[in-house]
Image (cartoon, rainbow, N blue to C red):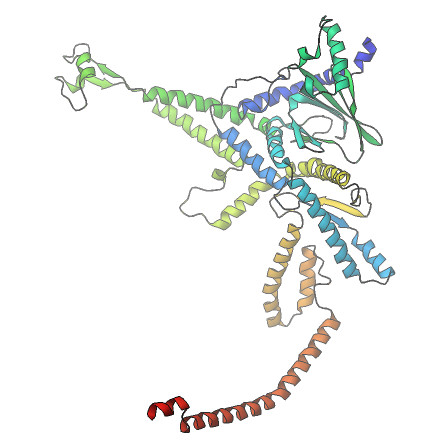
Length: 551
């Protein structure tokens, strides 16, 4: 292969863009050093091998990352609950219904039911995969390294790549132009035509003309996958050892990206993001040093050594050999335990350590940050603190909503339509359908509407009683409350015609009850008289059994 052709390989493009990623990878390795060192390794360690990592001197970093990861994962992919919502243009839908002479509310209800069925179908497809497990590990990388990339494989679900296994190129506005992943693959996992071409390549490269396929069964090779953006589509291709894999070539619509390059912060002009740990690396590294110093000092202080005066009559050998509770002749003043006498210095370090820990508890949303040191802490106080702390991650949630959730739903929906052989309408490309996602502490997806209705009913229950006391109308109040909650209460509240019909039905029912009351009273008197006569006749005429006994 000529030098010009070699420059066009995916591997050469990966090597060309690596220097832009190296500063971010260096920061990621430092952040992992104080949290979870096994998360990420150097770029040159691509082969599977056992690696030894240095354990941090504190566990707050790992505990905080795991805690945040679980919270964010459950927020991004809540179990058995849609976190997205397909919605239609209600104004246009009602206009079309009125033009066709149909009931707008009925058409809207049917349309929403159809969208809900598609949402449920998509959620069932998501729950059948292990995407939530992969996302949990991905969020850890995003928090520590600031970057991570996930690829959705049609049959296997999500697969993540740490920062040392991929490169990405963005424009100034943050749009991804190109991404390349690097991984290792066994020789036997490659297609047959690639294996044959690879053997011929290795014969020349390693100068082994007698090389056979059996000699390569345990070898692993670097596999490069490229995702290239074009004006109308995403192009996917793979190569190994400079050899293209023809069967891997694919094409995705431009609005359905086959991969998701996540980042913690979004900085214009940078292709990669910065991690949460990098922002607080000063406190975490300082805490690690303090923890090491206090631990070593505590071990030294815990060491028990006795000092004996040289002129003392007490022999060291006698002290060592005497059992517990035994007797030794001597003067107590001649024996003294060795003390470190660094209490105040260690106390200063301990107070500084506790101060840093409190700040990190708040950053990582750990329970220690929301429970104040008091005998009684109300549940409402804790809920408010949790809400305030969760809002601190609002920017991160917003980035994930745009760069992960929207892309994830579009990609999953694209694969679902392929499975169903396009039996489901293409809601993603339909200009009249809107796809929205919700994140944060509040209820997600259609659950947020349920929360709004609950608030609406609670507020109206309070307002209705007060409105009756002052003689105010409740219907205008309901419209004001619904508007503040962004709720459409049309079709829920009774119309004037329905109210009049209900009043008429109530009046008819009252007249019927009034007419039936005298008849019921007269019938009741007749039944009472008849029952009384029967009882009297029963007492005067004994039964056959009673007659036989008396006889």
